[in-house]
Structure formats: structure tokens, C-alpha cells
Length: 503
Image (cartoon, rainbow, N blue to C red):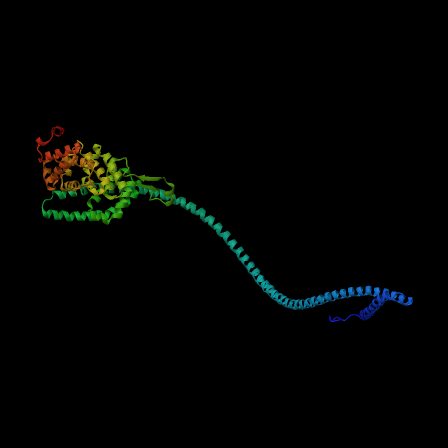
């Protein structure tokens, strides 16, 4: 067979015999078919024994056909089996190759495992040595820790002893401090009382009279001498103001009766400084103004310890919001001189207006020469404060014993120059004009002021204002007519009957 397989000997013999049988069967078939046809054609010509042979051959022929079919089926099975064996053989060879590869990989794996095992043993040995060293170090540290614990316990015991001793010493120190404060309190009180008396004396007898003395001097020589003295005073005030400002923090612990001399001294010191000097000490002025406006709130006595300060109640000293009118009045003036915040100034002018409704307030206004302080705020640029500032001056025009001294205080070039600048502005509203006209109407009654009106051209401004003002503003018209009449720039017969009767 061409398959390449060698069959067993008995299978080979059977195959050869089957081949012979197939060939004989074919010959016999040809003979049988031929003779059968001849027999059919020649009936009765074949002898019986030949016919029997033919029948036997025919039977044999059928057997051979059956065996041939069986042999063919068997051959097909053999071919199928041969294919299976061939496939199995190929699969076997594949498996054998894969097994060979697996054996190679297995050997490599065993080699690597052996190397890893050796490395692992080396690492285990190394780690064992390290663990042994760490164990020794831990024993040493534990021994050191035990020693430190013993030392710590000893130190803790000593600390407890020292703490107890410290508490005893602190109690003694508090008692000593209390005795010392009791001793210092009379001394400090006496020193502050002495200082406030000195401040009061300097304010009343020196600072408040410097300007008056300058105005009384007529000669140039005397003016130069007074100017040099005034410069010296300014320098001293400039040096002392920051120090006095720092002392405000102590005021909550000082007798309230001593507050007025300190604030008065601050006020007159500020009044001696010109505008350039005030700008040079702007930070001091701003802090001073805020402290005076807000007051001082302090916790604990500054002389005492910090522990005592936290335990003691807070104390305060009010200046601008004080119930004492002299202190409040002076504080208001300081705020007007030092503060620039509009809301602070508005509150200060309101407080001044309320105080000036009383005789005491008007007397303080004259005593502290407040006109220049108010004039510094009579500016067109300060429109929001202009009306409030004039309200304070209007309160001084009320008929009282303070009216004439107030008018005399206003009868100077500075006041009339300020009024002239205001009247020349076109931005003034009627309310401001009415308030200003009331004050100037009072001043026009003083004959010596006529030259002031002429010097600054106020009479011309009033004439133009009288000509252009709306006649419906009766109050303003009456005051304008009264001013011009007092200044003799308007004849009484030129007034309308209603205005004449009103005047």
C-alpha cells in the first residue's frame, strides 16, 4: 500500500487471496453470464452436470460478491484507521516536541529556583544578623530609657518642689507689689497733680495770651522780638505735644478732675502751631484727634503686673463724650483742629452747637478764643460742613452778655477776608447766605467795622447781591438792606415800607 504503513502478515495474505478471488470471480461472472445467455438461447443443449456446476458457480459467485463487499468495507475501515493513526502520530510528535521544550523550561526554572533559594538564604542570613544587631540596640535603648525615666522622675519631683516654692514666692511678690503700689499711688497722684497745675498755669498765663500780646505790640522792633519768642514757644509745643499725647493712655487711672488741665494744655499747644508744623506732625495730630474723639479704654493698671492687669476691671476716660462741659468743649475744639474725617467733624460741630445754646458754652467759646478755629472750616470746598460751622457762630449772635465780646473777636481782617471769599463764590445756597448775613448784620452795627467792609469790598458784594437776589427771600433781603443801611451805603427812604418797618 502507498500509505507507508506495513500490515501484519496474516492481513497481507488475506489481501492477496481476496485479490485472486476477485479476479476469478470476474472470470466466472463472464463465463456464467455468457453461458447463461447461451443456455437461454440453446435450451437443452447443456448437460445437467454442467448446469449444476453453473449453479454452484453462481452460488459461489454470490458468496464472492458478498465477501468482496465485506472486504471493501474492511478496506475503508483500514483506511480510516490509518488516517487516525497518522493524526495520532503527528499529534504524538507535537506533544513530544512540546514535552521537550517543557523539560528545557523545567530545567531553567529549577536553575533559577536554586539561585533564588541561595539568594533568599543569604538575605535571611543578612536580615538575621541585622535583627540581632537591632535587638542589641533595643536592649541598650531600653536600658538608657529606664535610666532617663529614673532621672525624669527625680526631676519631676524637684519641679513640683520648685513650683510650690515659686507659688509661695509669687504670693510674697504680689504682697510686696501691692505695698509698693500703695506707696507709689500717693506719689504718682501728687506728681500728676503738680504737673496738671503747671499745665493749667502755663495755659492760662502764657499760651492763651501770646496772640493778645502780639496784637498789642505796635512797633516793628517789638514785633521781631515777639516773633522770635513765638517761634521758641512753637518749638517747645512741638516737642511736648507727642509726650502729652502719650500721657492720655494713663488718664483712666488719674483723678478726672485733672483731665481738664491736660486737655487745655494740649489745646493751647496746638493753637500755637502754624499749618506747616501741624502737617509735620500729622501722625501725632491724627492719633491725638482719634483718642480725644473716641476716648481711652484700658484694662488694668499700667503700673501693675500683666497678671493683675488682666484680672482688674477695664477703665475708661471720656473726653469728647464727657458729661463735663469744659472738658467736652475743649475736646470738641481739639477734634476740629486735628481731625479730617467728615463724619467726626460733623459730630463735633453738632456738639459745639448744642453747648453754645447755654451761657456756660458761650463763655467757654470766648475764653478759648474759638473764632479762628471755626474760620478754618468756613470754606466753599467744605460745603458739607460750612452750614454746620455757621450754626455755631449763629448761636453766639443770640442777645446775651457774650454777644459784644464775640462781635469784637470777629472784628478783624481774618474774619472779613474769609467772609469776602465766601460771598464771592457762586456756589453758596440761600441758607448759607442767610446765616452769614445775620452775623455780618450784627458786625455792621459796630462803626469801626465800616473800614473792614470797605477794605474787602463787602459793601459792593452786598449791593450786587441785593440787586440780583430773589425778592421772595425776604429774610435775606432784610439783612442785606440792614447791613447797607448800617454802613450808610443805603438811605432809609429808599427802603420799602415793609422792609423799613421790619428793620
